Image (cartoon, rainbow, N blue to C red; front, side, top):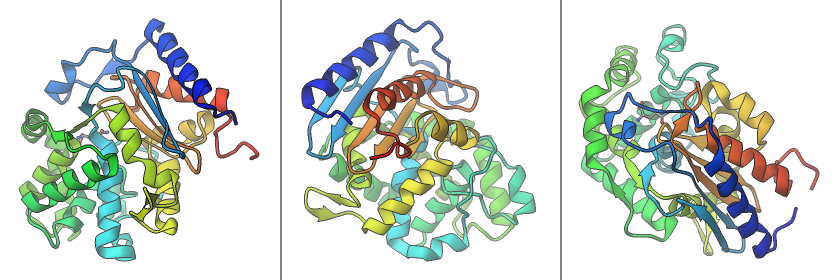
Length: 312
Ligand code: GLN
């Protein structure tokens, strides 16, 4: 793989220029009203390499709603809190269903397929609330992403959290359904209020790529361990198999890297040992993943050979 700083900056700028000109941009999520206000013209990319260099282009410093990308950070905190006990309450298999699907919960007795679909992340949030109040869990999450990114300006967009609270009927159904199966201990409103605040984190591509460094570096950032190497490896595996809902197979086929998307149009993508990459473009494909973000990552791995399925 090529990796001189000049090459990657040129690549990032070239991809951003190409994406600016794309006509088919996908459809911006509108089921969360504030997200519908974001222009589909936006595109950003940030690449942070293992040696700490940053290569950014387009709207890389514009904060956007990270939405389901927060599921990676919530999972990391929950594994830290309860370790492998977590897996009694959530599975590790791709769902092959939409991010907000309820269908598998019935036959699987309220155990969500994986931590990266809504049902799974709601259980993960409930686990965090096993030892924290909502306010504390939200504070812990905010401190965590600020520390990972090395940026104290990261904030939660309260208007997004409130809009999700007002319109999140499917999430309420998921939470109530799991509670009926005994797989939710907290009060539904408290668990969802916390989950919505995680989803409403606003971060830029640069901040997200910085936050993903622990996953590229075997769990370590700036010489200190965020998680063990084994946990980082396992989180990457889950991102590869489950990070894009019913598009996870297609994402692995096209990009070949662990990645996690959100309906705000962001994708965090990790090339282990090489780079942490974040892209953002609000227009989504049918599975709710960024259309141009996926295309941009496909181009990046084509140009760099970073897919984990390339010989190295
Ligand atoms: N907050 C969104 C929801 O719960 C997250 C979905 C997503 O990003 N795929 O519906």
